Amino acid sequence: MVAVFGTDGVRGRANVELTPELAVQLGRALVAVLADGGEKRPSVIVGRDPRWSGEMLEAALVAGVTSAGGDAVCVGVLPTPAVALLTTRSSAAAGAMISASHNPVGDNGIKFFGPDGYKLTGDAEQQIAALLHANDGPRPVGTRIGRRLTDPAAVSRYIDHVVSATNVDLDGMRLVVDGANGAAFNVAPQVYRQLGAEVVALHCTPDGANINAECGSTYPHVIAAATREHACHVGISHDGDADRLIAATHTGADVDGDVILAILAQHAQSRGTLKHDTVVTTVMTNLGFTKAMDRLGIHVRQTPVGDRYVLEEMRAHDITLGGEQSGHIIDRDYATTGDGVLSAVRLLSVMKETGATLDELATVMTRLPQTLLNVANVDRERLDDATAVWDVVAAETARLGDTGRVLLRASGTERVIRVMVEAATTDEAMSTATRIAESVTRELAMP
Image (cartoon, rainbow, N blue to C red):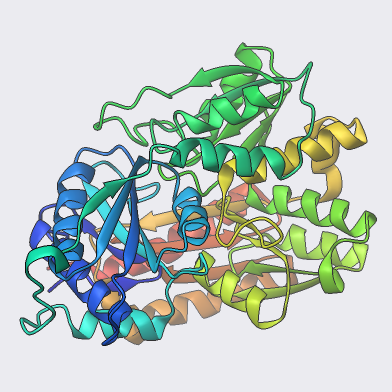
């Protein structure tokens, strides 16, 4: 088996590494772990994004769940955070989201949530992985076989939850929303309109093949240009499963997850609601964010890259606000996972409450120039032992000194090695990143 649990569930090319056969095995193993010898029939909420392979994998996962004696409650195309929410609101034993997030249409993934709405623990994932190829799992017959059910109210239940998070009046605000032709194509425009905003919907017509296709949060220039073109107060951009938010100001400046988190942290601190005056970020967070939080007297805890690690740190230290530069923002007062639509509503409410433009709010921090290069066609499994590459990294880090930093890591969701450099100027960041990327290609090129 090639596809295994990574930082965000099981990922792979649909019908290659992530096959229907594997999805069936995952469904069966999940129910075996959930049942744990009990008599109660477990139910699993199953959602997906609109990519082409989603229907195939949904059918296979449902077959696995039901064949092991669990009920699969299919909620259709909905954002990842909606599946997490519905799992808790439905008293389900687990939730499953079929999505590869921001990845291209050929990829897909399956991630699981526990009954509390949080991603399954590593121990639970290991138990599932250990059972993947076991043929001695539960084989109920007759009426003990599980059933495929649906929840017609799933969309409205999620929308009501997000709207009630602030119940802010957005009357007079004009927004452009890039839905990435993904899971939020329907609910995101509905939420913002229900709150009173005038909404220009962009890339909200999924056909199964166009998800993330030069649109969504990984193409921030698209929403920036659209915000200017449509004369909007703000632009909102989501990714394929809508757990991310990237924004744009009315002048067309992009606002990434670091800036959004800084805005929300400053506002929460001013209202006395920032628990322990602390936020959680990852090692990818721009140094400008750390400096801004230090100036405000807000503590910053850092984790490896991945919203799983951010959330684990938040729960371990009873922290309510955290996030990633990519736009995963987690507010544990309202959600158990990153929620791009909820984050947008929270950001818009700060604009309304303060009367400030997003341009003005974004001055809370000054970003250091940052370059991120993805090096493909290399063996990421050999990175840790690539002494020659790490010698280059050490030399470049020493050269930058206190004026910047270098981060080199293998992606947990894509088949690439990421090179991130911050420096005093954009040119210096790019030239440094290029030299490191060249060493990665030279030393780790696939045969």
